[in-house]
Length: 555
Image (cartoon, rainbow, N blue to C red; front, side, top):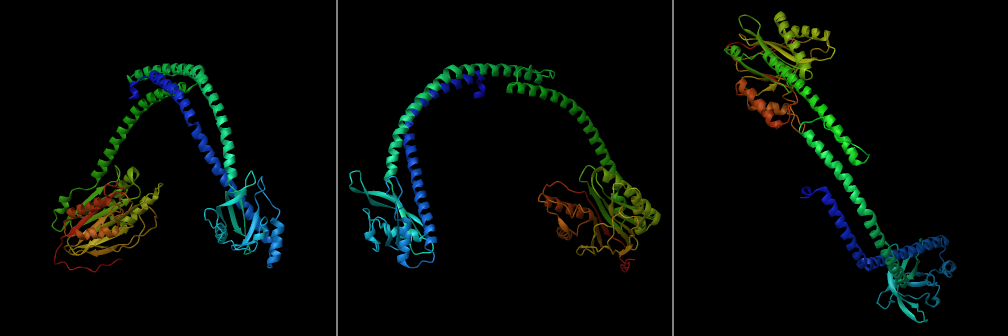
């Protein structure tokens, strides 16, 4: 609503409101003066009462400590009485000397400097005009470790007559004895002080109100209003100029700037606005360049991702058309391009021996993708040259170690399967253990020999292992993007969930099985960003039924 009113009208309105507010304030000050005085007197009374409490408490506890040292080792009541009398008999305080100390044992008077005739008397049943058993209450307060008691007690009046006046007492035991000591003050002195203070406050308040009202009137009419008018002009005019310049800039005139003079906040605003305009102009130019560069990078990344995808074999019908085997493979990169890869190819022209490869390059993105291309090419080349997975990855390892300044590495497992017999040989290069299911029985993790990834140590030797597959046996090769997939809470999918999911879907075909596993991971991650590449290769062997199984060995 205020945005529909100009600043000048708003400032004039504020000045008018301020004027009437000052008039109202003057009236309220007169009305509330007495209330403020009464509240001040009440607070003063409370402060004085707290002061009196602190005074008598400090006095009692100080003398009690002094007497405890004086009475140390003294057990004779007569001697104790003499010592206490020597300390407190002549001690008085207050302007009218009405303050003194006295001692009791239980509710029996032990030493009283002004009423010697009551020493030895038990005053436990003595009450004041309000039926307060003040001696008994003081004894209980001292027993609790010290405390205050209020009661009525006679005090000589101005004409010499005795009158009951409220009295505040504090009692505490003398440490190391069964004697408690107390003193008290009459509270009527607080009322007298409050009355005198109230008169002084009324006189002072009236004088101050007259001075304040006069000063406010002078300040308002001779200083504040003229200053507001001048300030209003100094604000409105620069703001109007800034608004006109901003409108020109918004219409496309990026060279429009505010004429700045002075050193106040509006001048700072003008300089800041001019700098903002210059920065925006530069930003727009840089953004145009950056947008073009980003578009070029995105195009190149898309092309790189397509090239990488195209490098992986996808001709499943060509292979799965073979009646002896059915398999499916898939790679999902965490970024535009990734470091995981899989591969499969025949070793012979008769298509009886097939090689399966799955690998995971350290890191992600373009560096991993480049390393992946090298590793994939080398593994395939060496398998055609050696036909022995262990020998092949040993040669690949040495080649990768020769020139590897970034210390990248790749985990892999390479299989060579004779489709006509079911005999398989494989070598592990530090990769995750595959899942193996015998004739649709439960999947289990294979026990693999430990080995370093490729690219770490050029002297590393890799073991050639043997495994016979029977018709109906299934293998599932994968990278750690599966079992280490994480949800938003940073919990991993884990081997346990992985194995449970695999056994849940073990009767499915390879492509259906792989899709089901990835579906379980998606449900677990619940929309969390993919943290690593996910690559898998599902294999089901349909070889000759009458083939006798060979003993699984390693050499």
